[in-house]
Image (cartoon, rainbow, N blue to C red; front, side, top):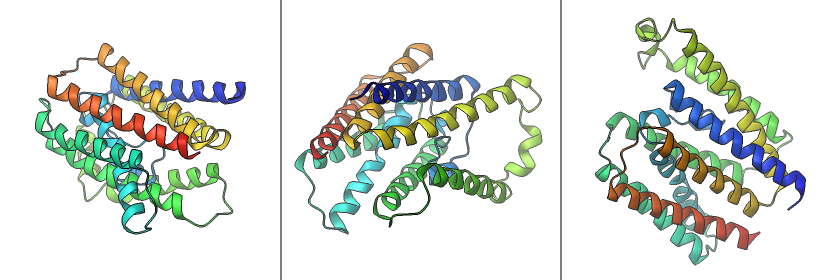
Length: 253
């Protein structure tokens, strides 16, 4: 790996960590329906969960959808390692709701929508025909679509009329945190695009896995997180699934 690739990887990890921790500190409830569809980097209502690692496990379960689609519809040959990875991720995500002492039905409802949208978006990106647009241009279009989708969907969800009742609406800290989180999300998207353009898929997957491990570990140390033995088991199982996925990506590349 070149020094430039390592620098981009470390920058990506920093932006990844800062973005998630800033959302947690600011207690920003990102609305997932549009941003998760386009996976712009700002998506994912991890604040519906008390623990960032729980959200990451559910987010990573989107790989199960991709693996299943490749196996069932495209009839692609899937390595045993990747199949085991998908099974571990599915088991970890499936066991979480039954063992989460901080279970929130609304949070898990949006999480299910999130992982299906992320899975569908990745399938679309993986199997779409080559586009004249660059990755950066596509991400800009994602942002525009997300804003438009949020604007139109604000009324049916009731957010349009309840915005004045939001307790932190007139706090400068809240608006400052929103702006900071937005900038961090943008830089996370930018570094992700650069990472994927400079490194092989296996190396890129390894950096993403490393960023998730660091973010999950620090969030447990910095925030009040209730970790029971079953939850720790789910997290370890999900981590094993991600590690196997990285191994299969590096072996394939």
